[in-house]
Length: 252
Ligand code: PGA
Image (cartoon, rainbow, N blue to C red; front, top):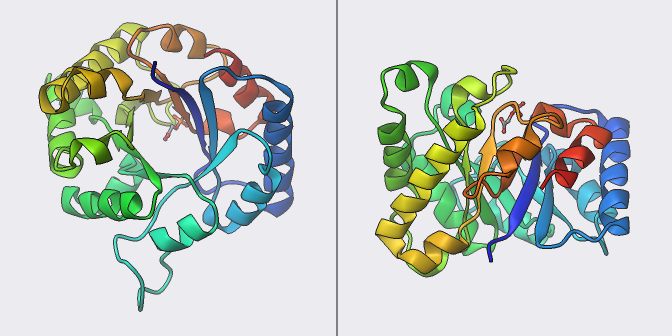
């Protein structure tokens, strides 16, 4: 049985006191509720990772980073390495988010390097893929997602691929309030699972968690998560309020 995952991507939000409050509330919920076969992950800005790992101690709440360097260590001002994340108890890292592709010009090659170095240091990549609106309108969305996977994760050996989470995030749905319909999400998730099946076989395909991201909130999560190939969500805006994020966790 594959793991259901609800992950919060805080992006560049929250000052210290707000972060402290939000993490504490989520940690309390996770501590006091039995969440069967579901992993809850928060990905705060890196500055708050120690705060998060402290508050998440002795709970089933996992901490992820939003980014890591493709370099191992050394003179890379401003960067954070996979080894540093591992040493701080970080279990996951978002890689390939469309905002990093767009604003930081991260290429397929750089993303493949980030995936490799994360896995080397036992940090599980949450690898994001997804098409732009014009690409969907031109019916290229399947090809775009296939290329993103082929270029940045399908070089992995099966054993490594098993330590990867995929997030399908149609770019037109991110932060826009426009969500993919449950049918659109299921269609793409099924397609992705089919690609994994072709590359790595049935067992790996069936055990891979594929998350949906893009304006997922407390009102639409249940319907999205009800699809057989949607194993949870990567939540942006709606992960910034404890009560809303908790409702999404309860929708799984
Ligand atoms: P959103 O962001 O939920 O605010 O659309 C999702 C994401 O970018 O991961």
